[in-house]
Image (tube, rainbow, N blue to C red):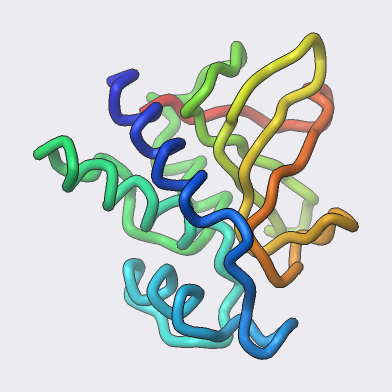
Amino acid sequence: MIALGKKTLEVAITQLGVQEIPKNSNAGPAVEKYLKSVGLGKGYAWCMAFIYWCTKEAAKDLGVENPLFKTAGVLAMYNKEKDSVVTDPQPGDIMILDYGKGLGHTGIVEKVIGTDVHTIEGNTNDEGSREGYEVCRRVRKLSTIKGFLRL
């Protein structure tokens, strides 16, 4: 369903610059909208909730069901969607990072240049935190990524 991935990317682009209010609170109108989409209130890490919300909005625009498992857990999503895992990233794929001890992070692939994967991520910042405060563009090395989910 390449169309859904590309539409999800388009939705994510519209969210660039969204920030937590106040910073470092996992709260604010937009962040709480992302968290609510997976059934959570404010205060939780929201990178996967952001991806889920973007996919939900894209699916609604395309008149299809959101195929993603409803969770804010990055590794829970990866494990539940094993049939969708690919290793050759393309725009619209969901990037999965695994930091060990159940900690993960995610974003959506915007483009790939060589071994650099350009993403749009929620709950990050320009300094690279996995517990940041905004939606922004990041560049990740392919070798650091656990895998990609293709919608």
